[in-house]
Length: 107
Image (cartoon, rainbow, N blue to C red; front, side):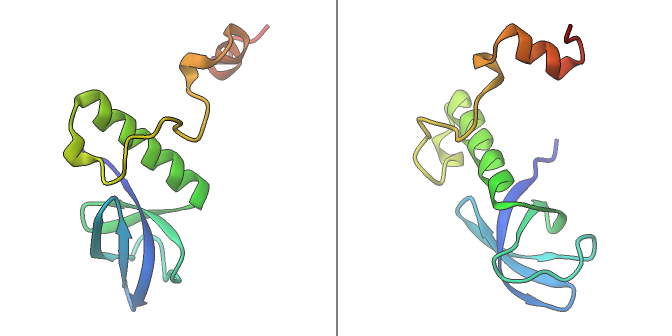
């Protein structure tokens, strides 16, 4: 399984960007997302940026990855302290009506 990591662009050169996120800094290929600017957020799979994302979406993905690592008991995967608040409402806290709307079964 391949998991995308939200990473922020630090610097660029044609076809590549230096990115940082989740305790790692690396150079990635930007062929699929085009030329980026420092400060942009991208979703990185292995050695390539695959999608341009917002800072808000990056925070959601980071929080989700932290929750997964916390559930697995793997503190090595947590570059930051485990969050008390993931930054968004989890589906487990949703009402029956909200869940029905999500699945297209709203009445």
